[in-house]
Length: 194
Image (cartoon, rainbow, N blue to C red):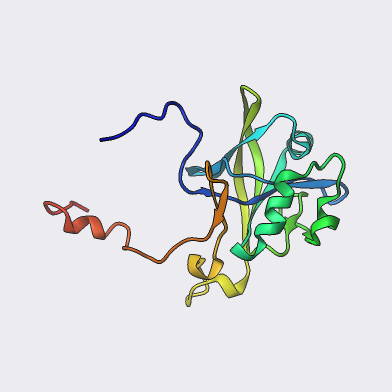
């Protein structure tokens, strides 16, 4: 029997990237769990940021941001960027993280994160005390050590992305591969048309 829990903001697990707003001259980074892919054509991300965040102000000013995927080993730095205000603290200096110039946008990427997405804002929508930001992905970067044998795709096992578990307030990594998508479902019922 299922127990009703009421409305919730919890989806398990949630990615936990560092989002950077601003430019090389002034930027701030923030841990964001309410983020995901919004569209494939054009490739776009959407995220909800609390209106009080300095990073959101910088994104509004520049119209650009970067999404940086940290490995599990960066949990302390990611958590610090989520619990510390960019209005009173230089998070780059405090964490020792390195802002690196983007290739397409003026907003820096985080050098220590092995996967990075450069984005341009395409829409913003206010929802309560949050702003939903949608951005088109205009470039991606991956450290060579997280690419598969072909050198063309990210190997998520090598990336070892940090994820957030809402409710229990835990950071975790991903588990092992359990099945191949677009294949394992063929074992369930009648033949699936291509």
